[in-house]
Image (tube, rainbow, N blue to C red; front, top):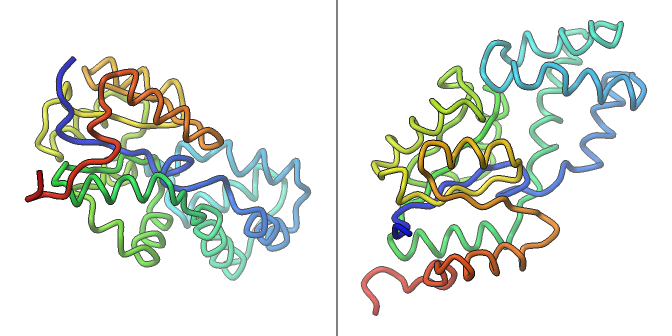
Length: 217
């Protein structure tokens, strides 16, 4: 097995935790929709939002229309802000590990399916995002996982051969696509970080778990 020179992280449910229930409740209140209708409408156009077929100001009217409603501009602005809050509950275990890799001089990147306003909101909120060597945001490329082209773009931006990249994502279809272009990949389950660490060791990648800071042996 090739050695790992870079680790590529998904954002949602890897670097971040599950959606914040308080933010979701706030969004439902703003939208004035039932749980079922809002949940369905929120997700049905999400892939289009992630790959910039829709942007933040065209996505939300689609959500409203699908639910048989309409949103004012004030509602849309409030929903955009609450949507950012929905995905800002950080996974401290994975973030701490990513930062240990960075201190050791191992390249790190993010490959996330994410829309324009979401990206801007996260970058404004989290300074640590700038510590990654490269972040591949789907909307910027008009591509989205599991399209193979977005993985190739991420590998190119990390300046690392695919075989030397470890990709971590919570969705099996995204893991399969990463493996298809030659990356090493592990599916991550937020509720069982210990299982992830065990899988790292099983694959002979124990050196990644507690890497020595650059300049130390």
